[in-house]
Structures are given as structure tokens and as C-alpha cells.
Length: 166
Ligand SMILES: [Cu+2]
Image (cartoon, rainbow, N blue to C red; front, side, top):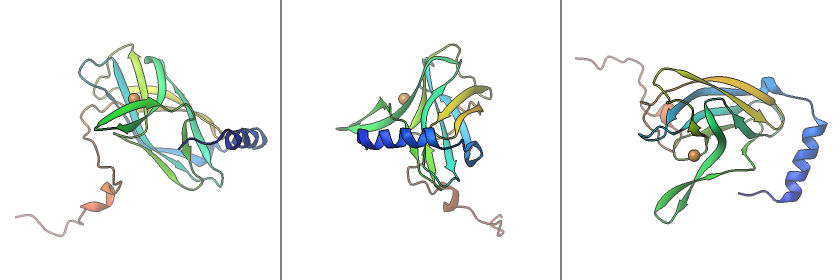
């Protein structure tokens, strides 16, 4: 999962050589939630779509709502899922989407300045290697249930109103 430093160096060189492609990154269905009852931490999830022809990378996130904002993922450690910071950020391949989802990659807020209240929004700025900075209003949805990791939720069980009532 770690890139070799030579590859990172090449990516950095490309970043300096290319213009910004901000319109080619779109964020779909972002939401944030408090992490646990103490509400001293929270996380944000979303789908990052890269419609450009070049790979991008989410390298940082920041917000006034917390003292620290980090990019995290979960790793399996024996029988336990642990969160770790991902310093190299999340790769967003050209023409593909990258999901930040429960149990996987996420934006982590530590040291919340105020609790995440259902229905409110938080302002978060994401920094992409190529697309630059993007500021989002992310709704807080503490009641959202976790999705499966299969990523096929949207296609699984939708019918077209074929008269199943009664
Ligand atoms: Cu985390």
C-alpha cells in the first residue's frame, strides 16, 4: 500500500508541472458523524470522483470544528480494527472514484470544539495534490447506518414501484 519514495517524487514533480483540474474532482454524498458517545471525535465520509485523465490524491483536510483533522484508515490487527493516520493520503485514480466509508478510509476530527449535532453542517477544506483546495459544507448525520463494504448498496434492492403493496 505504501508507495516507494521514487514514485512519490515523480508524483510531486508532476504536481508542479500540471495546471489545476479542480472541476474534475467532485464530492458525492458527504456526511459526518460523531465517533462514540463522548463526542470528542468525529469522522467524515464521502465518495470522491475523479473525472480527469490524471490520478490525484487527497493529501490533507482541515476544519475549524476540531483541533486536529487527519486522514485515517482502518487496518485489521488480529481480531481488532484499528485506525491509523495515512500520511501519504488517499489515491484517487484517474477516471475512478474513491470511497471514504465506515470501516475504511475517512477524515478524522479530533478534539471537537463543539459536539456534532444531528442536522447541522460543518465546513471542511480538502487539499488535493492536483485539484488544489476544495471547501465543502458537510451535513452531520449521526443516525446514518453503516453501509456494507461491497459498495453495491445503490443497485441491490431497488424496484420500480411494480405494485408490491397490499
Ligand atoms: Cu479515524
